[in-house]
Image (cartoon, rainbow, N blue to C red; front, top):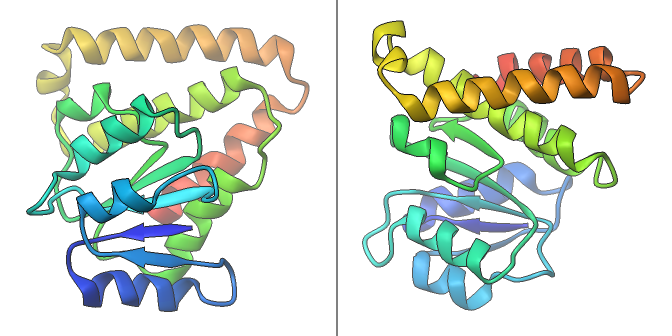
Length: 182
């Protein structure tokens, strides 16, 4: 796991929290993340607000390069509607305790062979949950991107209910983790 934060103490603290659970490496900025990130890392914890290269740009470049591992945004930046277009897998607002961080990572790394539609569904519902916790219904109703994402989640849910026998159990487990990390 690669931990990316421009504040060395923050990155090192996250690495210490994960010691014994994951093998970690830390880098202290966006440029260093781009130099080091690659397929050797199953997951990246990525800060958004960094002075050299913003975490949003790091995320975009990683995905453009074909990085397919999990990216968990771990940031003090409150989410806004702009997260709808971002290619992260989960979004956690600092401060985050060890149990919450471990639950989020376990969610992302525990089932690598599952249906890609299920991954898309969980990615979308994570974004929707973050936005619904931070924005008013009126703010969300005015966003065509939000409505399109909500519709896509509904379509996927309908399809997955018939395609995956234990879909309801998977959703319940995912929602339990979201409550722990939310």
